[in-house]
Image: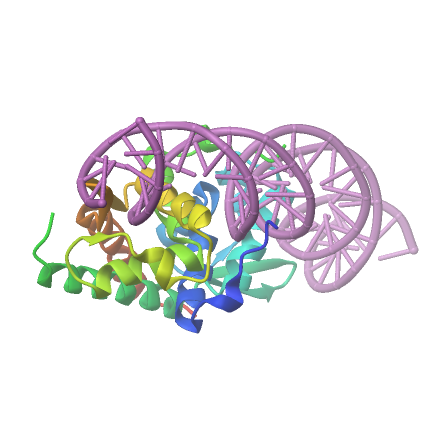
Length: 108
Length: 108
DNA sequence: TTTTATTATCGTAATATTGCAATGTGACAA
DNA sequence: TTGTCACATTGCAATATTACGATAATAAAA
């Protein structure tokens, strides 16, 4: 065992889970937060901002990218990262919908 | 290694990460979705809805609860579950803020 | 061309997660 | 009191994640 049975769930549920899982780590939340704070794309000075080794940061960036939360484009010898708005829109809409439906429930 | 260095990050980042991580699994997204669909609190028929064993569902519910995403109250010999609005509000506000700040950036 | 800067990848160790069968527990019913 | 229902917990195997040092890889600078 130890394998998530993704094929048993709907496409939508898997899509949401992938995005949320990618952000479900304080380092990755911090990375997103930094990308947001500095405005525009950033040519990775993230290693200096976080208390993690370069290899670790690189790994976290890879996960964020493969989940579709950030984009990275090569700029000379460094790489510019920025948040992918689409993913944020998806997640915001998701929680908005939940909140809306919750308001129609009269419980708890 | 293999341990998340949570103490190295801010309280806020950890708080968000805990919530997102808890929802970062298709089964748990599906559970939330079901709780939402049936309206009001639900006396756990979740096992019948998902393709997972009872022990596994119980574990997922425990994680959702300990992260603060759902509440459970004993009702005779079964348990009524419902989504904790506070957590949803937190997450919705979080993504709303990101989206808002993104709009002020002119990049990508 | 050699060096330097920036990022990625590999290998590895420590730990966490996922999933389930089996078993435990507490409330109600018979 | 014995059984049953609804969950929780335990114990385990399989796999995933986190973190980092060492080592590529690539592009610009000297």
